Length: 419
Image (cartoon, rainbow, N blue to C red; front, side, top):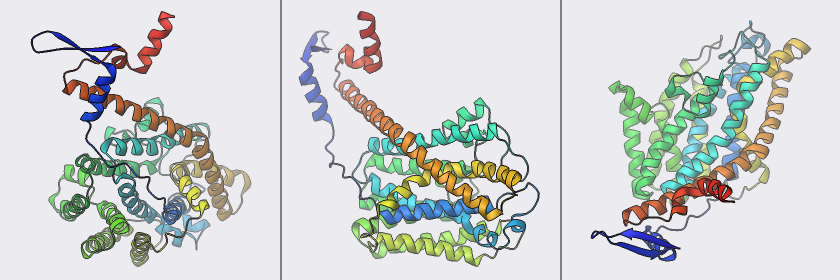
């Protein structure tokens, strides 16, 4: 098999396929081999704590169990504690900064893109469809933040994870955090395109922190969308924590981490003050919770928990993402109908819903997320490899063989026709 190429004089030169491949490989920039990051079981434990905290807030505070009474009517003592569970979102973002830095180091932009898409979308697709099916077959009204049956248009938009910028209602309101994560990934991807180094990442953290601090005063909507000033301190702190974990603590990194904590404390005060659950909510517990979250991640970054490698924590961490995506609307549905049918105590209904949702999350993880994520990851890697080959050929003015140009799907179809 040969590869033909036309010279400037109009003559066609032919290269063997093996020589063409060697040229393509040699043209690729050298990059250190990617190392698989060490999984930190304690980060998985924090993930699960954050997810359960958010679920506690939604299922015991953020709605009316019977459609009429305030949460404190059924759970007068528990609601005053779980009301702070919404701060689990801040912990999620803090952990996300750490994990993204750790999983992206010594990897290129293509690897970063592949890992994020294969991590986020498979479980998300399954959870969108499951939630849409449940709320369509067993709808509830009254006392909940989102009602109605999503149509095909809403489901299709939600499957892209871009329903918020498209102006289309989310199938479940908890999806708002995913758009925040996507914007963080885009910012970090821009950095990864230049290559991740200690100096560049530190500069990135410093610049982003500065923009997050002064951005709200500028009143720019575009800046708010891009820089995410409300939650940037948590992502920045997470990245700084990863650098401490990898390179050791330094005055600069500790300073970035401490400054992010100060900004986080200031922002959390506003978040707690905006709550209106029907009873007074003091601010100081929220400040304490955020401080403890920063302290816990710093302890992990310093390596003080590296010896904790319990496999069950890793499994718990794997369940966190589907559990977070499923817990709100399906949890409301389970509790409301169980309340109407059985009249069981509220705490028992909430606990039962959490257990059932954890079981459903495990099924999504094992039966959908793991196999589909592998397929997505392999497909994206193949597509990126083909893109690199075509790009090198184009840069060197080669004409690829027909079969290489057509791709696997077209080759397969042509083969069936010829047979």
